[in-house]
Length: 154
Image (cartoon, rainbow, N blue to C red; front, side, top):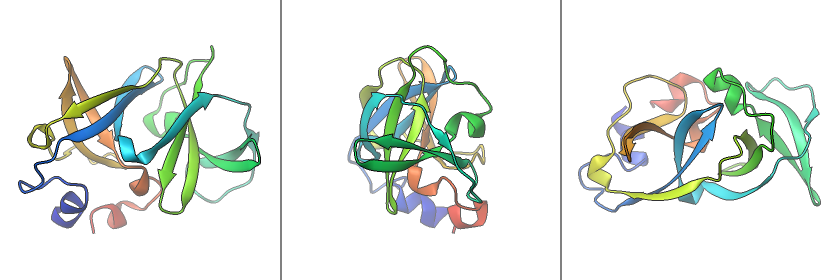
């Protein structure tokens, strides 16, 4: 856990504020570090594809790009709003993927590093928790999604 925490800036020496993008998926508010976001576009229909990768079973076309869809709503056990959902472009080390999110426009927030607490929930991809306004918000790392739990804490 400590190595993962250090990798994601959850150590006392990491005093730089975090830039977080907060958005909703099926009404659940979550945040991701701003550097992991590659943009937000209108959602386009996804095409189902066979896949052995957990939560990835479709692709979308954006211009000349064909991008995998990560079913974040299924991971959170919610349904994304059917009316005008948005497409969040998620940056990962292995390339871009897209996530269907609620139509509320994502917002950028600065959070002091000391206000980020380690995650205790054990949810896949959660690297910390923080308060944004009056809400307790989990902070996800796209890099950790899709990895087995043993790799997330290594």
